Image (cartoon, rainbow, N blue to C red):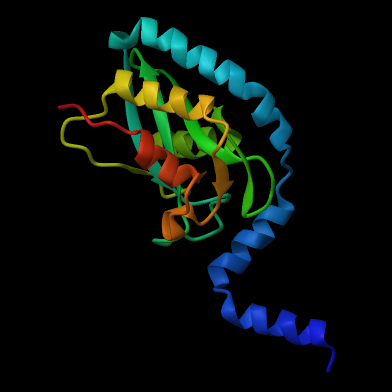
Length: 188
């Protein structure tokens, strides 16, 4: 038997069904991470703007299914993002994302990615097919401190996106989940 075929068969038996589904969805997604990298400067500018008027903004954290509503949420496969709200109905989504369809890549903070916006919209107005859940916090998120933490992360060029960082917690690595956990500051 060919060694490559044996390795492929062995690796398929060691990978969970949800990981295979995520891989298939990643291949199917039309994704250009260069746009995320190019836009991160504008993300930082927007966050700095908000800091000047922070008392008029609130932040809320959410989790949802990854990549597609077709891929089931598990304790290991989910996505985290913020919603930043000004006034009642004016909001935008904010999250950390990989810029390539790989398990490791350059990461970037992004505003209003298609999946964050569509999943949040589904949560608010439709059937919540993305299984969006609000992260429960007794006192809410401290907008100023959380935004400052995110800006600090944007300025730190030494952070790489790693899909499984919330499981393996590697140094100088983040994914959407650990980026939210490591930037979120709860009100006192």
